[in-house]
Image (cartoon, rainbow, N blue to C red; front, side, top):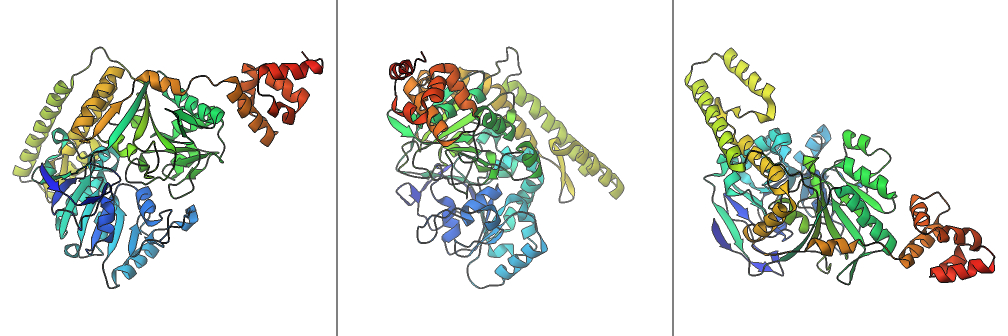
Length: 538
């Protein structure tokens, strides 16, 4: 790893360009690295993992004059950005209309900037002369993390990146050396040498029921109108949960309405079915008090909030929700970009564990995977050294396809090769599920180690007692205020008021006998009893 002296100002990179043909560890999230490729004097293809990230860049909430604008779904389309000069967003279906837009853009004079999802790289090669463009592969650690369900798109990136004028794989949380696939072995890796470091505070909360605790945090916000952290009030919450099923469960538990929630997830038929009755939103739309975000926006997407606090919710029974400490957490902490936000570098991590008494150690797992890779290499050598007919080659390729993304073999450039991306992903997934989330102690130890090894910054790990105190039982006065606010604004049946009445029956009696206006000014149980006694109701 090569230290790179960078140009920086106020925590942002101000370099003219990136080093060529390399991996660049920028160390910090939200430091404006993508902006360099979007605004310099070079033709650039910026390949990113999600459409959400593209829309976030093409439809920023601040226009050129600094005015705030939130973008509705029908306003966001693939093509030229209406806000950012000369930026073409390429995502979604590659329709005839989109191809025409792209050709028209490429036929114009001047510098070209195209930001696209990974899967568009292979298709884009038909429209451009790659030698005229540099390529930035943003959040490149996803080439490993997402391989199990995006192998075709990722293989497209890996098949073509060397054809460009130059390439740069960039991430603030790069793939660790012990998990790095062989294709990156000979690529030099630079690390940004920052003069300043960020201080991050993590609040781990170990529980058997992570989603019930998430709901409890929401109810605390509702009852107190905020979450008080060391005397500072958070008015908004950002929940990072990679499961729409679990998001729906929390919404049902808390009875949130569309006025106070926003769900940012892939807008596809499967998610629409799961979230029936709820609305799918976007990072380009107006924020709400409670924001639920899946992995499509864990990285690269900018959120703006004066008092928003980030929560991560992990459930070992659903592996999709298990965030990694070295890659995911630093990315999530950097999502809120408002510098004045006192919670910008803080995150509450709610998690459970599934302790296993007897399991294969990571070293044993690595040995088993190495043996599988070695056997796959023997098979590849045998197939390549044997003169096979076209029919036999096709049959072997079909067999590989039947195995699917878990196959150690693939067929590239007229030969069989070992796909060690599969092996590295197996080790990565195994490490997270069975080592990191084995116990509260192991997760905390991983945080302590990652604070030094990954971010080069200072990580503070708060004691669990501190987090538990954030959601202590609300006082009568807080419940009284919440009850009156709900009753004053709605006559409809509401589960929250039922729960409050169950806790303090006198509030329901007073509301029915005294009315909302009188109840509002009575702040104590004693004063409410006194008024009811006047009416002979006690």
